Length: 347
Image (cartoon, one colour):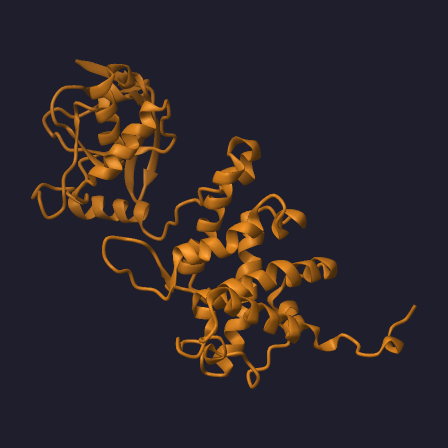
């Protein structure tokens, strides 16, 4: 059986690419995955499929969802090639004919959904198809798609569509997104310092759960970020990065930022206490001044590399007391320029 599709033609990395919409039931029987290291044919660039991810996608489809992003294909059947005409591209829809360059988990998840209910075969899917790419060219396209790309923060949906996400879900997603930024941004003081849960012990200095629990109350409806209308993720991330960078710079000048036995801010109590100070004292002050720059925060915080609180000063304290000591230390540093005599005020 042949099927004709209207298409848009473009040139991508020197190769013609045909983009069109087809039914999932038409794509499923002709697509396959060529695993790199497991297949010797041209174009084999894909990774081994992850069953848990496929199940998650199956559930996503069964909930009535579909995909906007394209499936990237490489037609490999030289005997039964597509017929390219001005009015449409004609594909033979029998047999193993087209490699998945990108979208192998999505198509496998759709197949699982179709196995449960054939109606999901009627899903429209967007495909971008190349013809007879060799492995080298397929790899270039695969790397172009999958390299140097960061997933969109899940909580960004709230910024775009507000009411479409429950607040409780939004808060957890938002703080996890911000912790991920702290862990992956090379400018971040906490770059690759977050310890994520897993079956084996993960590298890192601060547990994800500690950071999330420290931040979460301040992102609630009555928290500092909502109170001062700092609702978009870019502003929130910048404020937090600027703040902890001021601390990092002071402790780096003292040559103890990367020393876990001396630097309290790379431990749970330090991170918690610092975030309390940020939300309760620094954000209100910066909002009054209309400045959230790193330079302005440094000017307000007045951290002296020769007079910093260290881990030895809080190690004998319980978590709550250590957290309070950190917050109090930062507050006392900031309030150094508060007049001690009422006569210094103008009334």
